Length: 235
Image (cartoon, rainbow, N blue to C red; front, side, top):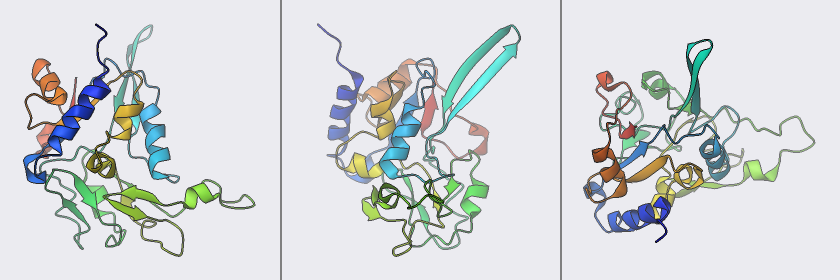
């Protein structure tokens, strides 16, 4: 029999997890760097999904070269927000715009954010960027409507244009595509990954693919010494 695409497996795991109360879920990612080809499809897919403007990136892929010439090795490291169990970005927000949700997602309320960037300074992973309000098509005859179109995040429709203006001037970051996940869809980075290097699911379910993969491999987390307990694991 043909082996099932892991996207279908994760889709079923997601549907199962959504039947539980939010506080009983524990969303997490396992990224297999052995499978990452550095194609940046996850980065581009994320930009398209959220109409990300200049300077804002949710899913960068770090391109690393190690070794001494001519014995060099090239590797790639996707870096989403780590949705930490003990997020250092939350307590420093002076207006309570960023918080940890019941399901583990660290969210930002753009309508509250004052753009002080304290959260950005306090994130040990550099996972947050700032929306300056710019557009890629500035300086052309007209700013393209696609850039001004609304997008969904945290279960809500947001706009960046001057009339609505909630998002421009705010800190922004990956949120594990919480709006998609809430509707039973996988994060865009998982679905666009050509190497199936990104696994997503409920870490509290030992039968979920993401949890079984984590248990079967020697995984690690970045900067564990920071005490933030990130929920993104690497193989």
